[in-house]
Image (cartoon, rainbow, N blue to C red):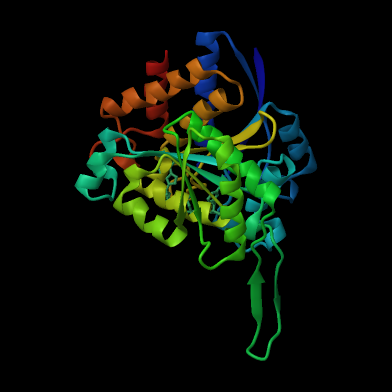
Length: 356
Ligand code: NAD
């Protein structure tokens, strides 16, 4: 098979880590007889510098034409002063919206070898955790009406959380189906004691439960969930939640794994195509120094192979190679706890060698 992949390297460490990911795909192609064709697409700060806009029309078109999109990261201090519609991050929101990528899957797993890098207390880290956070990605407060107006008390600002039954059902179905293929436990996180949008969320998720009798559904309020993640993360299998809550909780979960440089993500729509990216940003503080951890992006490639291309064996091979390299003791600086470390390129070579 030939797969066409739009590569948005982006800014900061983006080019370094997407380079690692492409090497991984080429190796998978050689070993398993697939062909991966890469189309380098400009977006983010790189597109602003070259063409004066964060997501040129041609870039969007090429992302839409591809079988999947691989993204490094966009943004950086150089573009921070620009108005909202010209910020590099606009490119991300536009690609998600235009490709209809409403489901964001963020696995968070504690590798036993990295327990010491986790901020969790030793007994909690010993219990380990392996969860997937399913975050709604194209609705809720990030897309509802927002603005400012004058009031007798000075300016007022508002953002609005809006969810429809259709939006909640489609994200809940993704989560139920994911849970069916894993530990069969789904926790829906909301703020139903206060927010009307959360009450509709809860009702709607429960309305689907009878279609998935093998999945145990529970609810949790988001404030409790923030505590449970650090107190007893092992209890979670699949979590489903809104755009805003998912954004915050998945960053919290990422920190518990030891480094944000380890966590991949997939953004999926109605068809098989998706956008795959590490959950971290462009890390301008370490860009160009060879210090980036490429594992989050490499694991994003594994998610692409499994979820968009149905290549389970190949995805398992990539994840297994990462696991064995971590078992061997190799560490990039972010997870080395001050000990000896390897560069981004060296870590990539080690995973490639294991994969081969
Ligand atoms: P960040 O995730 O880029 O960095 C946070 C910290 O984690 C930094 O200390 C960084 O060095 C470290 N880090 C991140 N990725 C790492 C990796 N792979 N290996 C080792 N260390 C890593 O977050 P930030 O500093 O808040 O944001 C920097 C820029 O990235 C901003 O312009 C922000 O808007 C943008 N951003 C982009 C995305 C995206 O493109 N998806 C996501 C988040 C932030």
